[in-house]
Image (cartoon, rainbow, N blue to C red):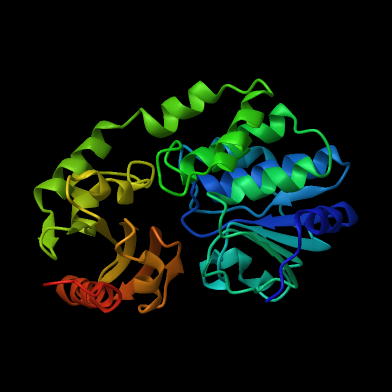
Length: 320
């Protein structure tokens, strides 16, 4: 797969109009912020651009998305995807566009090259980092673009604490801050506020944590029954995968979220000993070396066993 340069991606976007931008299922801050920032940048160039409505938005991401949502009946001439590694991650309403993405912009090593043209940079901490570079090649970055892009970049690197953070990540963040955005409000919402239901979820997850591989692997489960018992919403359950990695001595945190009965979404957060994307790829998923995911349809114990066996295949010194 060949990938465009920053300049080439910028020129493609300059030539586009009547553009629809796609985000992935279970949208996070990166896919939403990247799409919204890109949409704002395209509109500044005089383009007609919208985001395809995503039914799974949370209360924290929706405010950045809604101003750019496409009206019913909008027919695009060009389609762009942001932060989507594979068409399997398209929401149901995006499936009709699976074979007509004109430009795919992504940062996952597991990216499958589904776009007619692609701009992929796995070294980037977030897709928002890439979108910033592309928009900067098209003109000045405004505060309207910068605010959602800051959401994208900061959330995908854990407020600049994760190992994917680079000097360029900090440089992009600094440039975004210089536009005058209220970054402190973003940090408060995404990193320093938890609902009581979220705290109840975390308490239950930690009380039931299982340790494997000489306590270097932690498995935390979020069954449907727990969501029902705590009356938690999708907003309460955002980024639960970050919890296990905070446990001392754990370098592979496995979070199991039950989406439907016996359908488990796995999220791995790992240190250098465990390549998360290689483990998840064995179960049909992908992502980054330190953060990846997959979905397994099986009862809890079997699903957990499959994941532990996948980790064991990519970690030479793994012990059950």
